[in-house]
Image (cartoon, rainbow, N blue to C red; front, top):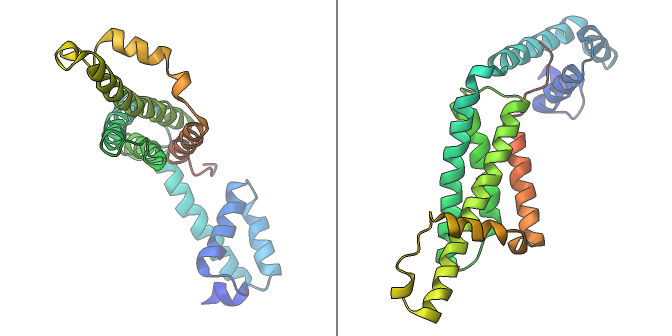
Length: 212
């Protein structure tokens, strides 16, 4: 393969990634072609490779370019993912008796994907922010589900099951009590997994970066 021969031990994927990174950084296509020629590639092959990659990236950037009309759909996608992801995390915590951190990471993944899917593949910073906010919301939902189950179980041991029959997960008083104690329930590992979830949610709707 010509690109492999010209660039030594580089594979075709590594070679194309290198060109793409230069184009994303704003380097002029003529300069990229010149560098490839200096490395041993013929001018026609270098020009063809750069132009092909540039127009593929430009097409991708145009397809994913952010537009305000997708915001409601992105919010909906993030919220659905937050409820589903948080519900799954909470259910696993109840079932196992542990808040498994990497499941929280999965909440961030779901929210990022939900935002992109319902915004029809659009990307950009506003969508990244939606993904981050909804991922945090999803983690809070998961924690609340587990908190409610633990609290209800402890209260049942002290007062009996009949005394807790009135308790509802959707009670405003219960939600306020949870929020008031939320900071006390966040340990070091919680912050680590939340950080990874937020980073993942932020990364998925990130634009490719090439200037159209």
